[in-house]
Amino acid sequence: MRVMVSLRSVPTHTLPPANERMTPASPGAVSSPAPPAGMAPLGSPGESTARRSRPMPRAERPVSLYDLTLDELVTGLGQRGHAPYRARQIYEWAYAHLAGDYEVMTPLPKTLRAELAAELSISTLTAVRDLETDDGETIKTLYRTFDGEFVETVLMLYPDRATVCVSCQVGCAVGCAFCATGLGGLTRNLSAGEMMAQVVGAARQAKARGRTLTNLVMMGMGEPLQAYEATMRFIGILHDPAGMGFGARRITISTSGVVPKIDALAEQPLAINLAVSLHAPNDALRDRLVPLNRRYPVGELLDACERYARKTGRRVSFEYALMAGVNDGDEVAAELAETLRARDIPCHVNLIPLNPVDLLPYERPSQAGIDRFAAILSAGGIATTVRYSRGVEIAAACGQLRVQAGTMTMADAATPTARHEVVGSLASSDL
Ligand code: SAH
Ligand code: SF4
Image (cartoon, rainbow, N blue to C red; front, side, top):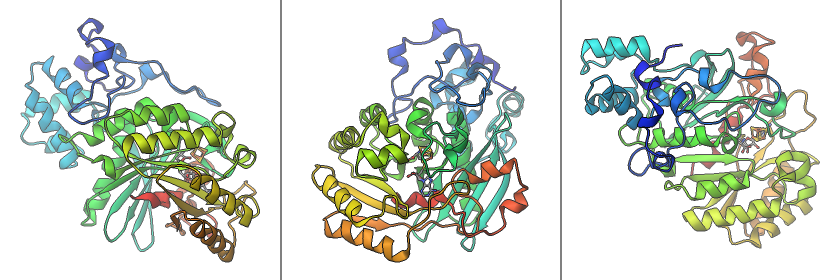
C-alpha cells in the first residue's frame, strides 16, 4: 500500500474540532465529510455494512491523490516542508491537465515528483477494458479496484455535451427487482478517489476525441445516498475550482429514495440536480420494485422531493423504468400524473424503457405501450421525455459487465447482444 507518510501520520490532536472539519473543502464546495480510509487518524466510521462479502476494513484501504481535498494535500505537503502552492500545482496538473503520472508535472521539483511517485498513487483503479458503441459515441470502461472488484463507468458523447455516468459502490444493497447491480448485494462503497478516478478517466477519453467532459451523473452502480460521505467528499473535490471546477448544475445524483439523505443534500451549499428513481406511483407497486420503499414510502419520498425543490430552487427529475405488464398500464400512468400534479414539485419525468436483465423476469413494453404511457402523462400536465438507452451493442446493462466478468471473458462481454444495454445512458437528465 502506498500512502503518503506525512498524511497518514497527522496526529489527531493537530486536527480542528469536528465541527470545523465539516466546513467546505474550498469556497463554495459541499461540506467536506470525514477523510478517506487509509488516513487512519482522520478516519470515520463506515456507513454501510457488506451484505455478502467482507470488504477490507476502511483503515487498510489505500489512499490516492484523488482521495484528497486540496486542504488535505496542502497540510500533508506542508508537514514535509513544501509550500501550499505546490499542492495547487499538483491539483492543476491532476485535474486540468489530467496528468496520470507525477513525472509530467514539470513545474514541480524532481525530488518532489520522486517523493510523490514513491508514496502517493494518483489512482487506485486500473482500466481493464473499454467498450465502444454508437459509432464511438458511447464508451464503457470496466475498472478493477485495488482489491480485485470491478466497477463500470460510461462516457456518452452528445453534440452539445459529454456526460460521464459514475459508479459509487461495488454492488448495491437496495436490490431493486429489475436491476443487475443489486443482484449480488453490496460489497463495499467506493472511495471518493475511486469516483474521481472514473471522472478523470472519462475526461481523458473525451479529450482524446477532441471533446471536453461537461456533465456528470451518478447513475452507475450503487446508491449514492447510501454512500453519502464518500459521495459528498467526491463532489467537493470535483467541484473545487482549483481542480476540475465542475459546477453544481452539471452534477446529478440519482437515488432510489433515501429520504433523510435527500434532506441532508438539500442543506449542502451546492444545489446539485436530484433525480429520483420512482418507477411506481403507489406503495403497493413500489414496495415490489424498490424494496427501500418499505422504509421510505412514496408519500414521504415525494415530501422530501418537495422540500428539496423548495430549498434549492431546482426541478426534480423522476426516473421511471417502464416494465411490460408491471408498471406500464394506462391507469398507472393516470395515477402517476395525478400523484405528481397534486404536489408542488417542479419536476420532469424521464420514462426509460426497461433494459431487460438476464435472470430477471421483467420485459420492455412495446413501442405503442411506451408512447401511450408518455401521452397520458403529458396530457395530465406532466413534463415527460422518453429516454432510450445508448450502447445497445455493448453487453452491459448497469452492473451486468461486472456480474459477467467472473464468468465470461471480456471479449465475450463485447459481443453484441440485443438484450443488454447501457443503463448509464439514463444520463437522460443531463439537465
Ligand atoms: N441507485 C441509484 C442510481 C443508480 S441506478 C438509483 O437507483 O437511482 C440508475 C438508474 O438506473 C435508476 O433510475 C435505476 O432505477 C435505473 N435502472 C436500473 N436497472 C435498470 C434496468 N434494467 N432498466 C432500466 N433502468 C434501470
Ligand atoms: Fe441499487 Fe439503483 Fe440498482 Fe436499485 S436501481 S439496486 S438502488 S443501483
